[in-house]
Length: 406
Ligand SMILES: Cc1ncc(COP(=O)(O)O)c(C=O)c1O
Image (cartoon, rainbow, N blue to C red; front, side, top):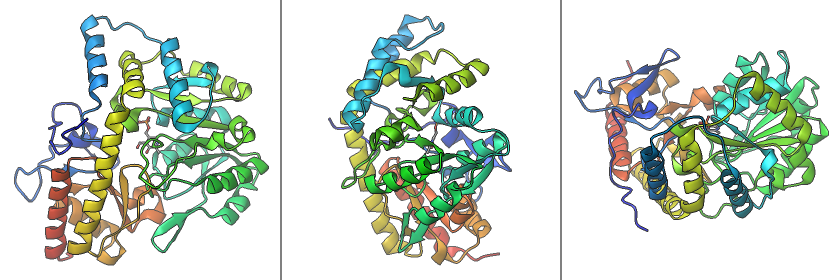
């Protein structure tokens, strides 16, 4: 298979959050994406985590066929759907799951919210490992709970977990749930078996329920091995909930379909009650069709896309070393999100935002969104055609060269 991943697919007019919207004062607004200082040049968005690549052709064909049918009444997953998820989980992660364990939700973020509604009460504490995917913090706060950060240790350009701190924090009986981000967004760590085992043992010893968000688990760089948290031991599987989705893997986020795996019947029942209380049943007709086609026929596409993303990373690393050595990248192990240490630019987060967005016209996710620990960083989404990446880096180079702080 040979995909033309260098091709730029304009995404305007498709309701694309990445290409047609911008956060201003905590509100997602439709933006014109006209570059303020460069006439009609568009802002290059490298923020929200979706890809600028067309999804696998078999998925597009399956959706076409479904659309041609012309009837879009209520849909629910059939046995074909469940066996697809079971086969994928077995062959990719070595985890044998059962149909009853699989609960569908319109996304992992809504699932995390509802899981917190099921397993915490307002005032409880929920542990996360900052810097981390910011909707975890929103989910905790939206449900009246308190954030406890078992902050990752950043040393010699890479991140690791702080197990002493984890043991101390989970010993607090108010900590009911820990949200694991595996692989970790934004620091791109693919946690090893030993790290996950230690994490799980500490949570288990302190009776802390683990929500393992594994949405990025198919996006692994060569030389690294993803381990699914519940496969480490039966006890871990019984005291955890694992969130999977084809959305990051195959660029299907807009289809709003994810799979929440809950082996323990009591935990499952509590979650089902919350789904019921929110009136959630059935699922998006297109999400079902796309998931089956992607998991059954999308692997050649995925392999090619991952190789391209790795090449994008190497290109970016070399480019920065040559032209903007002040920006240092944390070596990614998975995801397509690159965490960039910008301390040597010597700018405050506000000055950096001005430089990157207003002067260069590149829209990144600012590090501080992932927690105060991220304030010296920027997150780049490099799942884009190389010409876009190159254009963004050229703009940044010029902006850094010419920038004079006000
Ligand atoms: C760790 C993590 N979880 C969840 C999501 C989004 O999940 P969904 O679109 O299924 O709500 C993302 C998207 O970037 C993510 O990085």
